[in-house]
Image (cartoon, rainbow, N blue to C red; front, top):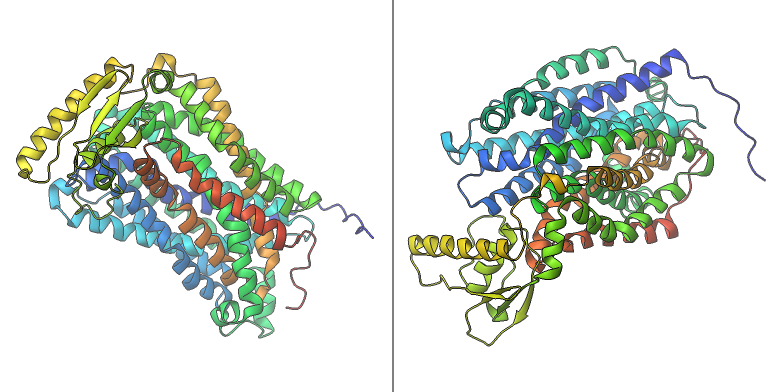
Length: 553
């Protein structure tokens, strides 16, 4: 028999305060965290200038990912505190750590000033940010859910789900404002620091807001009765009954949600700027516009999950994303850089090389030397964001690049001195650039040919997928675990999913593109992960809508 419809509920002033205070504080925390992602290309030049540009950008992405690597450890540390000490004081501590480390990033000297100390200090701050964020989300989501009526948890927690998007939007808008105010040259030199430094004011506001909150009534009642968990880590992960749910939450929910989120927002931004060579201001404005249009749908899908369930909305979002990413990103190329698309069709690029000389070009440590003629040719093409295919040539032959009707002979730098290798690489790159230009490949997207309206629409579609997978997921995760270990149990799968599956997406995708020579090849990573989540989620995740989250506590 279908459950009776829930009684009408009018949100109280206290509930409004809980949602507003938790969400606003978390927006500021996400703003701090995503400043780095929004400024990855500038940070690569400031802190990783000791290596070539391509490797420097990969380093910057890895430093970005460092903040994600440690998020699950933050979830364990602060989740345990949250289940033992309380929700309020734990996520008050996380925001102090986040805000302080972000402010310090704005003061760090560049690589040109202090050498290797600069990237080490930067990565240290990213690690602190990641640890803090690992404790933030579970606390905010749990705190709001434990204040919500059982038939309104979807819409209540969906406000928390908007915070990551709004934090990214805030970072983009402040960056755009600074670029406009000081000019691009000054922004590249020193203006990029200002968005980090102003976070100290956001920190003060956030701490003041959170100090005004009261402890979650569910936790306060449980603590007063002496029923809090003495060992939340052991209960969460040392007992198969709960550990099984944690594993299913990771692979059947958060892994797919994470790759859809990061593809629709951060990877789309990187793709526009780094691959399609759209100028940074235009790309940021387009992403900001899609965020503005898409944010209300987090609330819509959260509210809808209170009526039809959390699971069908999340699973539909994963499936739609996996089925449409390739055509959507190809359409983004068509409307962002039609000259590049036309050149790829009329003058395809082919690398003819001995396959034994072609290696995987991902170089996270910067110490590998890719001196073979095949590696030199493919590295040059990757830097130019040019699609290419590699075909086998005679063993021992020198690699050659065929661009339309032109063929460029490569060179092998294995036995050359470092100075000679640099000179020959520069000369080879110059010849290649001229050949690409003659074949219609332009270095940057022509602003006159950028179809902003269609790009905004396509980015909005990507945002709809994000809203579908992200809007209802906090309510579902909260409802999967008991109150005494909820903070710990839900935080770990969420932050492994978002910190590892999502945080590694840009680095993994760009490495796959460099390996294959196809600007769309990196999309296989989010497509496969989203499909995995869809299959596991459909088979094993149970619907939780309407569940009494205090039953058995």
